[in-house]
Image (tube, rainbow, N blue to C red; front, side):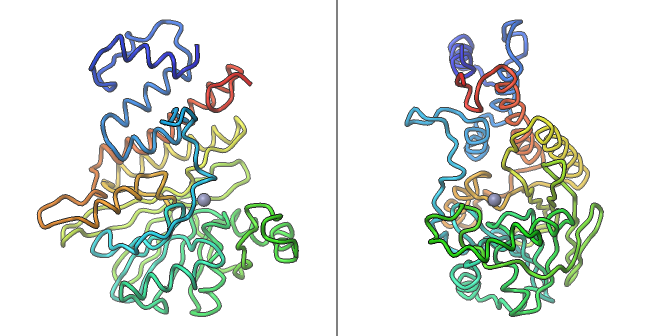
Length: 352
Ligand SMILES: [Zn+2]
């Protein structure tokens, strides 16, 4: 029986009982590790419409089209209207990848820079539409060295002298001969590997972000956490203060949402998630995003936020428990695919 089948029958058995109420003793004694992890992930999502998006995607639930919800690499990057999410935080980007811009009286800190062609096509037009000056971006802090996150950094470094920060393994990756070779690839775009399309080159090495470091600008301090998802990989996550209609809150952005492929790397990925969960708890984080708005529910949150009226809650303010549950889903869904693979199934739970 496939994990999805199992949970369907469990649902029938439990009737309308909330997953989060389903005690472990409702599962058969021989329930597999992936079944248990899937139940945990669904329980953490509960009836939260945003967390359900994350759970369906990360746990490869079966979508309405009968196929697993695994759209990560295929999500088309449709432009999203540049949006003020908090008093001092903006989203500028597309439905697939974007940047988070923290504003302070002394300039801006941007988390991630999208693709090589994004500064001129998305970031700068978006900022201008919001009345923000791109020359005021003092720092770009990179979550991880994917071309969809670090691609625009070179432009800002060269044009505005923006300081670029990422982890040492990520600097090593983007300054490697392999990445340099992307620039020399003269094949038509359609014939080039996905990761090197729209690559406009690497910034020159600048700031190395390490666990425990902070960047302070205009009275706002961003805390830096090393959250790799591979044995030799980099990755940083960030916690910063935000304000919603004048009230203080704590926002986090977790960098690496893509599940790596090997058991060793998945173990590291889970450890990073769990450790950051703990840091979030200590810091009282009550809002969390990633740089992929289709993963964390931000696409839907932004569309709700645009219709916000006085007195309506900000859909990005989810509370401390729900913020914990978001990362818990990333963790449990990694356990789901690990369990499926260990049982000889593919990531979707189908026989291989
Ligand atoms: Zn990415």
